[in-house]
Image (tube, rainbow over the protein chains, first blue to last red):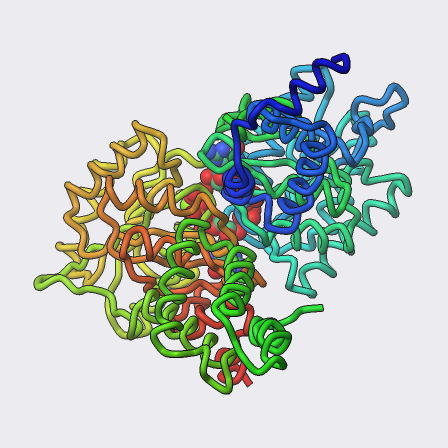
Length: 291
Length: 306
Ligand SMILES: Nc1nc2c(ncn2[C@@H]2O[C@H](COP(=O)(O)OP(=O)(O)OP(=O)(O)O)[C@@H](O)[C@H]2O)c(=O)[nH]1
Ligand SMILES: Nc1nc2c(ncn2[C@@H]2O[C@H](COP(=O)(O)OP(=O)(O)OP(=O)(O)O)[C@@H](O)[C@H]2O)c(=O)[nH]1
Ligand SMILES: [Mg+2]
Ligand SMILES: [Mg+2]
């Protein structure tokens, strides 16, 4: 815009008033982005609106969209281990999270995706605690057509992880995915157990796990941030999987996690079938949130 | 650091209190702190809005502004209002005039239905009642095995037909069996489902029609966020829920979703789940959840545990 454009813009009447900020705040809070993250994002939008002399509410929304996408990209566009040209073999993925988030199902979906792409996959049933957790993973293993290494209920989860890695080595598998029992991040004994599984894996391969994925239920509220913080503190989470995004929840906690912890989202879960996994796309995610 | 709402409100009022007067604006500032605490606790923002408006009116009516302890008064009003909203006494399970009393567990995926079914069976068994469990989740891999394993560990009978029969058929056979064996309760585990899944919602509505249960308990995760109301509302409208079980309260989630669910459905919280084991089910106390939502610690529970 030239000087005249800018001048007209100055005299143009804004088609929004201060209530627009309340509206936008409700969208973000209603999506579980949390008050703090919402305020931080809206502050940025407000500054730009002022600096750029924005008069149209459509433009305010555009700026919000841009800032939301930027927030999700804050962690940086790091390439996940499985997409790197020098991907280690076997590639080891550890999957963690609170109870019922969607870990086991997500593992089945990932196994399906890797297999479809031509990789051989082995799963480790290191949830030896929850009733029939091993059976659940075995059923998935059969459906997807991948091997599952399992021990008896109540067995040491570290030993399962170790055996899975050994099996992968001897059969030259490309990808190993370890399922773990759901645990609330507040239970220090269970978090210690998780650290032990991580150590056992490292004993076999000091560079593993190459990815540690935290599965979050997309319906989770503000507690999700604490989950991400604590699991990261214990075993260094490298990526988030947002499961159950096929409901009406928006999964806005991903903004808080990206903003405060710099952890990227890798996948989204969109159903209960093995095909229902998609790579995370910040643009699509934001657009469905603002829709 | 973790600051309790009490401290925050005291801070808010102290700033103004030193001028000797507390104004309506000071009250609004205090209510902003309340709003913040409730949003952090995942209470739905619409519920929060109505709540703070009501508290504002009450505070003005109670002449909080002239009080010497405005922070404490606001806290008291907020807390009392929350307790009222959450319901009075810990509500009991309904009983059928003629056994068996049928209890159905419904809810979103992974909320804790199957575990809660086992916990209820355990609770009833401890009261020397005779529950029968029914495995009506034919979809989730190994859902039947999960309930069978839990039932076996508790030594509670279970009716299951694997995964090839329809849930309605299994449920009806389970009811017959419960009558035959003189069970006092039939506890029906159902598959997790999304409230927007037409077919699956029809299925669970159909189960309700067939079983005519005394209780349809909506099992909700204490970590749930803003969307909890949508799911709860839809389940309530389609299946007529009679109570709520709030699970995973052994973590540090503040559990504000329960307040929202109560506000939009009117359904009382009946139990809270506080662990993965079969005995980790507790009666619900409104005042404890009120304190927890406000971030004032779960003092009473702590004291009781000590
Ligand atoms: N609608 C929907 N349901 C999902 C999705 N992912 C998982 N689920 C369902 O959520 C429930 C829990 O999933 P699991 O994979 O067993 O969760 P988990 O984290 O392994 O659970 P625990 O091992 O008990 O902690 C199951 O009923 C799954 O079918 C998803 O993306 N969409
Ligand atoms: N810490 C804790 N975990 C719980 C509680 N209730 C259930 N869980 C765990 O949450 C996870 C999911 O529980 P399930 O009983 O399988 O949930 P569900 O609703 O039957 O799941 P679907 O059948 O897949 O929809 C399991 O890991 C349970 O052990 C609780 O009160 N506290
Ligand atoms: Mg699992
Ligand atoms: Mg279940």
